[in-house]
Length: 289
Image (cartoon, rainbow, N blue to C red; front, side, top):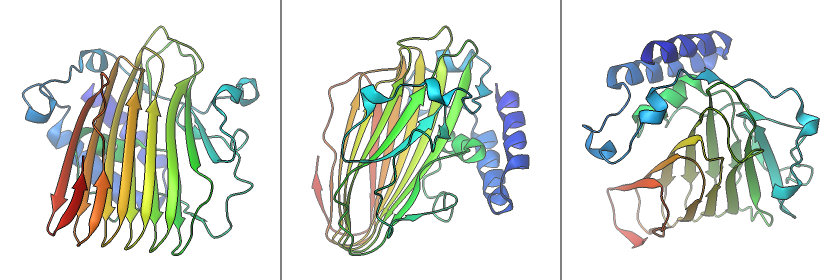
């Protein structure tokens, strides 16, 4: 499987922007050095990856029949909707007409802080990601409507994988709400679908973010997520995570607390997902859990 993933990474690298090539090379090198985690790794001793390692996954391709997808069951009113189908952004299904003009949509995912918490699958994502939401909310902006990041998986008869990398930057004294959702057009597929997501969040001084995640993908899905949060002074983040789908679902959360007065709230959920949380702190903090 490692050889196959390496070949795919080189394929993606040849098609990527020049600015990302050095980043992708470093991510791939880290992944090749670490390999896939096993139960001998302390952080992974309770996570069974058997369904993942026994399949040869191909990278998902853009879905050709976008018009055939009925997204009405998942549409939420009064939101700024970003839709991804099989890992690719779909302008046709998205609704961004009311997104404030002050919000900056970055052309690609910033990589300057991406190495702060490298892990096996985060590095693999860095080598293979092709799309994601990359937003910067300028200072003193109160975003009145939530951002809805809707990810849709479609039917497949071959094992495939999608790697998404999201970046959200909330600048000084701004507030936002983000709803990250994963669904499927079918209740199950013949073969597994591997979804590997990295979400980077930067929260500047005095800013706040409420982040909700609902993972209800089909029953053969393998969902692995890594969320990396950088918090600055007097900032606040509240994170809620609900998992009711997938055969394997794991979420790793790392929060960097480098300044005073930060607040984070991550309630413990009673679901079947594997989840780890870690806070790296060099200062005083207010903590709710």
